[in-house]
Length: 336
Ligand SMILES: NC(=O)c1ccc[n+]([C@@H]2O[C@H](COP(=O)([O-])OP(=O)(O)OC[C@H]3O[C@@H](n4cnc5c(N)ncnc54)[C@H](O)[C@@H]3O)[C@@H](O)[C@H]2O)c1
Image 1 (spheres, rainbow, N blue to C red):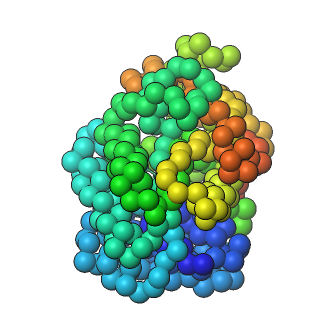
Image 2: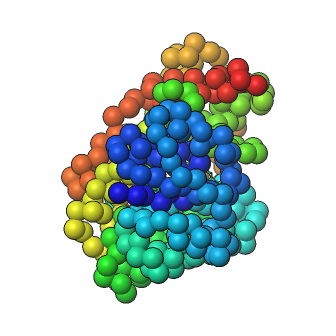
């Protein structure tokens, strides 16, 4: 079975390619490498000892994208490609709409034309907006607080309309909570270009001296230690979640269905920092500052739907996540 992976050189895409190859799927990835590098593709081959096809392609360029579709018959698409930095999306909304929306429409049009009827889409817990009813269930009201989130919500809507109009599609929407960690080999991990947006890459920048101090936004939330609580999931668990979603798409199901992928447990920023310090025997210089507008106190998933329908449960601990993130970061530093 051949799987087309958009954005396959990125953080979650690369770990999913490893898992796909390990489980015997044929993989073709394409990426424009705007937030990744071609080196990742050789790392995927090194980890798995298997080959995969890779194309440098920007999904906004429909002609170039069609060449990828003409190369092979794909049985499914896993769609990761897109920009993902919330702050940047507020500053440059049109760039986000152009890339994430136009690119996705190109991709879905070609899926229809070339009969790639199984689609797995990377959505995000951000589509739950500022909802305060924890844990979040898939049928919670959806809303957005920034252009990035709006692109996710619009793409979910586009896929819903496609599934209604064309009965051959099996579409699985995966709403990720907070993926961190790295492959245990230390060869692939989160390596964003530019200034990182999320907690773990910012923490790692402090560890390797690229930033002086980790800002913890808000110490007065109504949470056990006052800092924000999030649902962290190890990226290799998340990759496994995609395999479960693929199996579901091939199980005879048609239409569209959405699933939360998280651990189902809230972990505070301070808890994460303390665990990181303990398992890696390092000290993190941090400072608690004012809350950030748009941040919620708590955000964690109800994972029962993914467990009962996809058969997916995240297994790795926060200790594993901190250990693996650190290993990847230090390996990268030592190679410089
Ligand atoms: N990492 C997270 O915290 C998180 C959380 C929820 C959802 N997501 C979503 O999951 C997906 C993957 O996230 P990630 O963390 O691996 O991000 P990433 O930036 O590491 O990976 C995305 C990949 O897509 C590529 N890309 C971007 N625009 C492209 C284009 N026009 N054509 C071809 N390739 C393009 C990038 O170069 C990159 O390799 C994204 O859609 C993201 O929005 C991520």
